[in-house]
Image 1 (tube, rainbow, N blue to C red):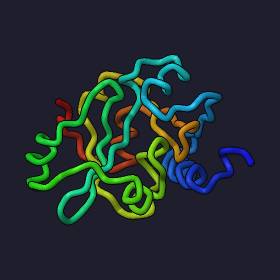
Image 2: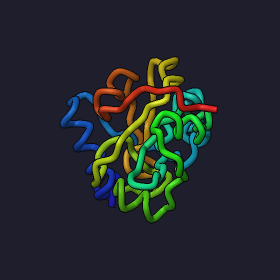
Image 3: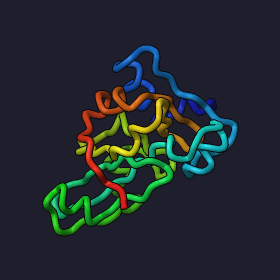
Image 4: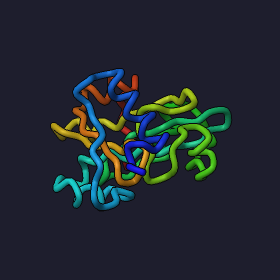
Length: 159
């Protein structure tokens, strides 16, 4: 079975195509499970890889899109959201909220509605690469389109 036939990848692909017919899923020979792996496979800077990190608050979930060479600041996240209890979601919560498993969490095509915040340090790249439902699947997009397709709010999220 081709990776493109897997349900999570199909979901990401549909979200991309519904938004812009020119966006497509790229299947990599090597895993892009980590930002470093993805950058090597794509021959790009680690920072151009979009990490999709899901955080749990006391009453909701927030997906943060962070540059591959940066770390998300939980303290900044608490200030921005005005919430006290924020922690990384566990693998089961990630699967339930997004429909994706860790390593392949796409910023699009989630099964539950989730608030999305985008780190402004991603603006420094012309091309960004984000996961598309599987550790070996990514898509290429620019910052403006990423903001539009995810309806994400741009914030300063990094340490």
